[in-house]
Length: 578
Image 1 (cartoon, rainbow, N blue to C red):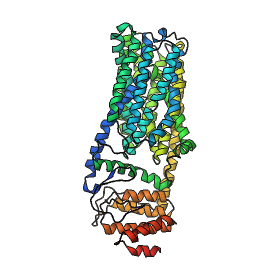
Image 2: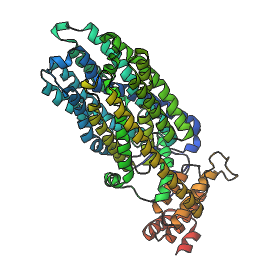
Image 3: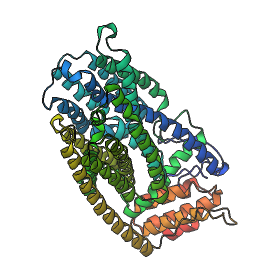
Image 4: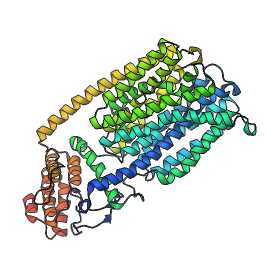
């Protein structure tokens, strides 16, 4: 590979052989990947990334525990001690998500421009942990209400930020499993937060004169704070930032993988990325609003999760037994989530992997409505916990849909997550105490939102199907070649995939898709280690392509560099243009 990009400002006097250097644009070092075995480096890179995703799961577990611990505290006098009446507990649950609604979109736009997202996310984590610890000292309902709002305000930065961070490291066919792996922290947290609460509520009640629910908030907040301090050194930054845990070849490959991921979409649309227009573009894109409403309905349909200890208690067991029975359904839900996500990535299908879990959840709601039999109702809880994986698959669908522009993707993820979070606010009132213990009306609302969500997913799927057919037809008209990455290089050492990207660049220049041409040429530059003569010739090809695309400024700049900086350049092409 050459150190020289195949389109743009080029210093042709630099070396073309195997050297390593730092980029001036802040995208990390560049190395000749032809000198290393890409599959080995890629496997090593993914293994390192996956270890850090595992730590993100731990952070998300604490995020969910700090969000839902009031459900366990409710079983040990939390409502009575603060004098709550009517729907005040439901309001206390929903107020946290009002903070989510206000923070997610601006937070992701800030994160997109930050150089060290690890510092940003871990700092936010430390702040919400400190406020969770303060929940142990509240004396009135209104104290708790104010604290819960600000906890949600800060917590909101994490999940959409983590999803965006993953989308900057993993390719589309790898992302679904990782997002689901992250989202499994949700199921794991619901399982083990109940067991953790069981231990704290059972062993610390009355210690140092404090009631059990106060210890619950303090201990879980302190644990989150400890993990937040550790996260500063473990969470990854963006591929464009130098990461000390990556070897130079791995850093280069991480950037290359993202360039390869976006080139196809860029070549179709040919739109340059403007960091300041990402939010505007997302707000004006009807797909963002459609998917936001869809996610809102999906979250509303799975609102049972925030009241799971209460639903477990309707079977008539003691507080200790009810909390213990919360764990097995969520453990099964975690296991099946991996299977669903992996199959979704392998097949490339999102729609059926969203609809399937939702239908299983609907079956659970119907079982719960039909009887108060303890065995059947407990079985219904196992079916209900299969539906939340649809949330992770939907987020993968979102990141794949808005994968071209990083700024627009950040804004889209945050806006859709914010609209989805509004579902937590409204659905908190799906479960008033007066509808218990059967909660028939609550389950009917969950069934209704599931059905509408499925219908909206189907409509969106049909839209994407039509768009894909139109894109395929456009590619045939342009005569764009198929990538043949698995074919061996020809006798000149130039891989067919390299030739394919060069051909794409020329074709896109001819149709005015200059942004797509740049991306195609840049990706082509990392496919092979070219000799200087080949590079000079290809630079000349680009001069001709840009000239015929009426890009005269770039043509003149490149001509000047070819004639002044490259004494061995193919001047014949320059004369053709002149």
